[in-house]
Length: 57
Image (cartoon, rainbow, N blue to C red):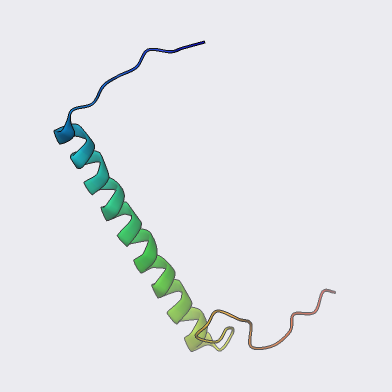
């Protein structure tokens, strides 16, 4: 059940880690932007909790 193993060079691993870090930073930035929008709209607090309880129905 062993598949083909592709051994990566240090250069390839470093490049992939760099891409992952950049993507992670973009995700964090978009989350912060979304939270700031919801805070300005008065829907959530800065900690991310709803300002008012939601009612279903």
